[in-house]
Image (cartoon, helix red, strand yellow):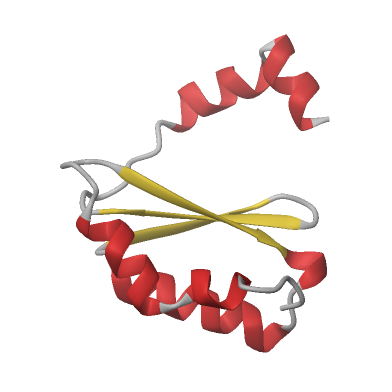
Length: 95
């Protein structure tokens, strides 16, 4: 990781601190610029994040990924997601 100070924001301790401050059903999000991370960095971030949150999901776009962590199980309404992806504002942002 090239950004000064960034490694301290990818530790188990940091992610546990975030998890401890979530309300019931709250969600934490960690952006990962895949084009700037080595495989080892990526593995370390994912492992640290997964260690801190009871429920984790990873969403990937072309060159970025998001880790979502929560103290409640995630559910995805696939029909609603598909509908949202076709909304003009959402489609524009994703383009």
